[in-house]
Image (cartoon, rainbow, N blue to C red; front, side):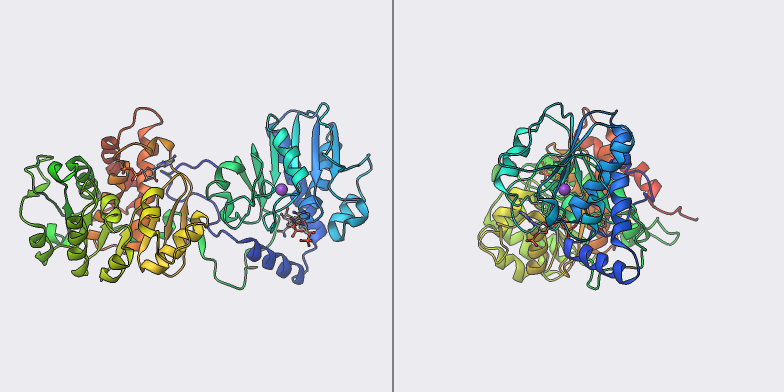
Length: 500
Ligand SMILES: NC(=O)C1=CN([C@@H]2O[C@H](COP(=O)(O)OP(=O)(O)OC[C@H]3O[C@@H](n4cnc5c(N)ncnc54)[C@H](OP(=O)(O)O)[C@@H]3O)[C@@H](O)[C@H]2O)[C@@H](O)CC1
Ligand SMILES: Nc1ncnc2c1ncn2[C@@H]1O[C@H](COP(=O)(O)OP(=O)(O)O)[C@@H](O)[C@H]1O
Ligand SMILES: [K+]
């Protein structure tokens, strides 16, 4: 699912349901009188529709599993055959093993059935595979023969029903292995695994189908994972007000590195530009070297302790180009002790590698940590965070343990809050993978927090605005410096107009 990030109100359901929550919704739907046979009919019919929209008629092989995912496959096969497509249907289990709605739909299939044997079916003329083997709630790896067969057919496009079979819909992590889909068609609500790597990549293009389960049928427990959306944070963004002066719009302090201490001053400069562009009233680069940047950026060579003592400071950022050192760690703890909003990135995180508990104990106010995978692994090694888990679980554990918002960056940036909620931002142009783009993100989040926006809103809004700037900058030739220049026009779309 591609998305225009410059759209203020894109239309998609935010809630991501775990397989257990989806199961609970199914059960409640049944209690409410919805018939599984009908839901399956709609699901399989829509799969066939999507296939016909994307491909011209061609020999298709539909693989049906033992459960309801397989049931969807029987319906899709029937619809494609009715539409004149050459369809082969392969059932993983003998038909006598099917139950419920899947068995009922299998009974409506009037053409030959191949039952899986040994190494699996021959491919023959097959030009397209529909994978209706297992759904998002798979709890164990694919049978080895199925895995080997699927691994041999990678040259053919594969349409996954609900998820590529083998992918854990709750985490985005394959249970051992899952095939690469060209297209995944899922039902009622997206699952976390559709958006979290490597699941996001394995699903290919995503289609969400409304199978007419009413929206008021919800799982009994709290939905803890959501897609990012402007409506989560848009009202927190505020225009300049008539009575504002620069100090009411926040004063952000950024610690800049010194080349002699292994630091790179350019990173902090990028952050300062971004913090200013999102509206912080004043931004100071606190630096041991004499830096020059945009004339409106305040540059001071005073000691970091003096910056921390500035009572009017409303936010601190440490890390970009700071150098990994005990001095950086000490500077972080000094800023943290003020209780003012804090953003920690890059070297500020790595300076606590092996000693994350010291950072945890030092945090006294709202804090956002913005690690990429490498920084995350270094910081949380040796903590209770289980680094063998997938990104969603790790980000969630880390935020809970640290008591801070964690922005785990990547093509599927996760914004995890200490209360267990995780916001997923699966849309970001890969051109953002360029040095300095993370420094811009840290500066955006800092600027928003310095304006008085909460850590959770600043992180979610910041990640969106950063990705939108990347999208606006275009696919080619974008450098981190460019991102900052697109922020004004992007903010203009998202912030209500100022009256004065
Ligand atoms: N309302 C909705 O949302 C709707 C949902 N719909 C569809 O339902 C799908 C979910 O269906 P589902 O719960 O039946 O799960 P699914 O994966 O098809 O089968 C589980 C079966 O597989 C078996 N099994 C598991 N692993 C195995 C293995 N490695 N090797 C062998 N067997 C294994 C397992 O056996 P068991 O673990 O009990 O031994 C069980 O029998 C969902 O993805 C969507 O496509 C639609 O119909 C429209 C309405
Ligand atoms: N493949 C990708 N697709 C989308 N966004 C990406 C991708 N790779 C990196 N990004 C984003 O680019 C930024 C890179 O940040 P980071 O790794 O800290 O770079 P730097 O430290 O050089 O500024 C992050 O916001 C990250 O989410
Ligand atoms: K499947």
